[in-house]
Image (tube, rainbow, N blue to C red; front, side, top):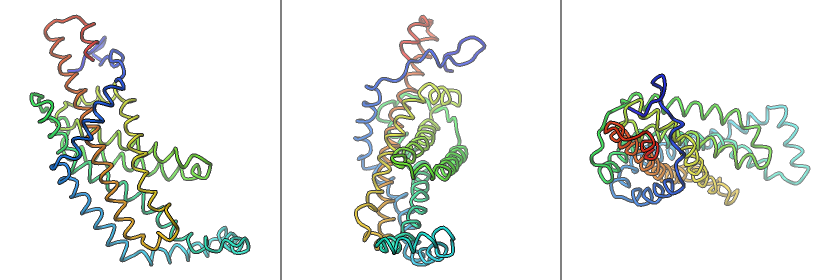
Length: 300
């Protein structure tokens, strides 16, 4: 049980924020873990599933999707006025690129969410078990969440993130919000999904809630870093407008890059969250042994 104060409620305020040293320690450990042969092998399954599906759908429906968007733009009153204006300004090449850019803008968030879901369900539990075996072999698995609870939580967070992205689109037109808002949303999603999954097998429900609440700011900071790392694959589309010709292949490449980013993020969250769980368990043992509260707060 987490430490409790009056009324039996967990004393989250007793736990000081995690130090930068804790975050960096988990970061470097994650760098080593993510190149472990088992982790590389586990990451292949999301890559094959999401990358293969994205590539096949791209080749099968890319031209139809672009034609459909272009037809819709031509029948929309606003773009019907905008497109002739672009021609008059000598920017008629943008007229050609507008529909493919919209298709890519709609497809990439779906690719990111699907990749994160697959990594969360297929990779994170295996990474957590590997981290426990390497660093915390004596930690008890209290199985605080079943697989369907993990899946339900992941889907709920993904839906919330997609709604937030859709609502935030107007802000992207205000510089430099497009460089701030999407990574923050992806960071929120990564923190809520991967930290939950990292603790699902070994932490009891009350332990998981305590760690996630007491360490919410470090976890959110880690998520934001991962959100910006997850935005790097978008640079594929910024290399040149001509790259849109290879859009189906680039979507599959984007899946591969996002899989690598999220696999690293799973390792980072697993190292940090499980270290916090181990620290909490050791604090429990000290409290059970009758050590003073001040010692308990120092451990946490």
